[in-house]
Image (cartoon, rainbow, N blue to C red; front, side):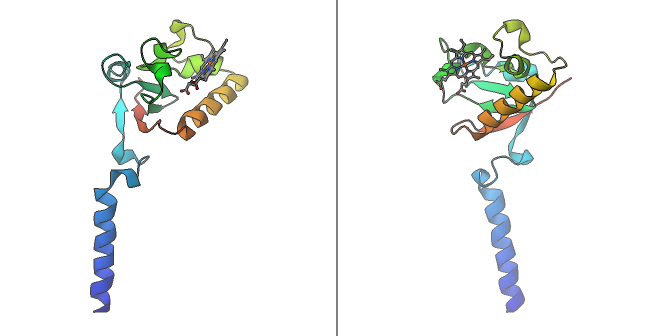
Length: 130
Ligand code: HEM
């Protein structure tokens, strides 16, 4: 009887874990790996708006800033890593990576934290870099 109850508890926990995706929103199994090309679909124009920061892809559709006409619309569907690290909106800094200095790394890490902690910006995947 004891082992039957233990067994049922394990089975219950197992079913719970695999049936509720929101219980493990940041686990690798619930996220997708995006190439830059796949990411570009999510430019806020006819689909959702996704932005990559470091190796993380966030769904930022809940903010008007990334939709057409928004202040940061040009980041939608792009890897904004270098632009954010340099605090520079130049489009040539999108979708490319370059070595950055210590100061820029700190700025970038703060942005990563901002996106992670901001409500309504679910992590939807990781960025596949060549
Ligand atoms: C004159 C310069 C700038 C001003 C006045 C400014 C102003 C602002 C304001 C008011 C917000 C808050 C918007 C909101 O929550 O709706 C914001 C957010 C933001 N800014 Fe700027 N900004 C400037 C430059 C930049 C630059 C150079 C970058 C990066 C290259 C940048 C990236 C961002 C990002 C990523 C957000 C967060 C948007 C979000 O909540 O997802 N900003 N900025």
